[in-house]
Amino acid sequence: MTDHTEPPPPRPSTTPPRPSTTSVPSPGGAGTPVVGLPVRAGTAGPQAEAPGAPHPAQSAQSAPVAPVPPAQPRPLGPGRRWPRSFAGRLTAPLPGVRAMARLAREGALRPAAAGLADIPQLPFAPGPLPAAEPGTVAVTWAGHASWVVAIGGLTVLTDPVWSRRILGTPARLTPVGVRWEDLPPVDAVVISYNHYDHLDAPTIARLPRRTPLFVPGGLGRWFRRRRFTRVTELDWWEAAELPAPGGGAVRFDFVPAHHWSKRTLTDSCRSLWGGWIIGDQQGRRVHFAGDTGYGHWFKEIGRRYQAIDLTLLPIGAYAPRWWLSTVHTDPEEAVQAFTDLGARNMAPMHWATFVLSAEPVLEPLQRLLAAWEYTGLPRERLWDLPVGGSRVLPVA
Image 1: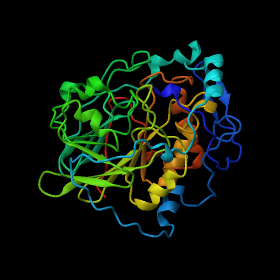
Image 2 (image 1 turned 90 degrees about the vertical axis):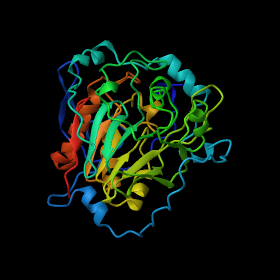
Image 3 (image 1 turned 60 degrees about the vertical axis):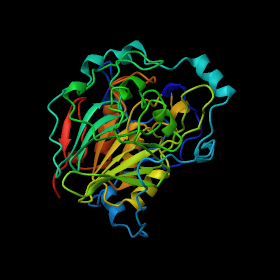
Image 4 (image 1 turned 180 degrees about the vertical axis):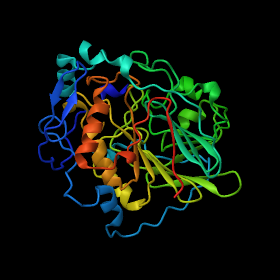
């Protein structure tokens, strides 16, 4: 089952910001008035800042909080026993018959023709990959939720999807930003959960069977059936380490997300879902949110990991809102999640690649830029990369 068939539970309770008169170009070229960050009535977004006040990320970092000691790394690879179901981790109920009937009646699964007209304008600018040297932290967006992360001398892939199409969706809107043959040797892969646009079997089959894989609890058997021999399954707040060149290690912490899992008709919530904190020997951290709605977990992640240098957050596949509000952040909620995390920088993802929902194809970035400007966040902290674009984290 793909992402456009996800449940429509109630929205998170947050306070909407004061109205704004910002205007964002619509896909047809006309200005669309925006009220309270360009969100629809009844939705929530980031609060405006008082003049001269520190931006929310700084406030979150400076607020006194109880320290949380990091989890001791678990051993790599051994299989584990997991509960039959992770349904108790849901922060929203799965869809019912009425919701399914409404979705079928409305048929709002794809943008209208005008919303697809801007496909040629989607940002695509592939370039050379930064070198994965021990002192370098860099990210390259391959498209959707697939990143090439250079950290601690290792090359790490997130949710690698190099296929032209996935089950139940049209072909990619933009090509993959990094050719598979241009990748350096892949040192590790992290998987957020098992939906087809995040766990792509044809891409996984390209990997050497000894590639270290870090996956959610309950998902390891999927990889072991495909003869992968170095699979580490983690629960929320657990961690594992992989030796890095020149000594030390790169650390992988599995953190919660607001989502669910399903890959077949009979396996709802049989495996876990979540995001990852990837950290190097110098304490620099990249947060990969995976697939998630907005909710309380962002503040808790920010409390436990108080020095996130970069967060990779989803901004697309959010319409219709009644159906997707608690499993996919919209652009305004992504900005709020960034401030909740207390991260230094944000790079958007989960847009401009596949048609999974009904919003116009350029709208996610347009709304993100408007929300970012509205909150007064420094523009240089938003890394809105094109597909294939890279950015190197400055040395502190």
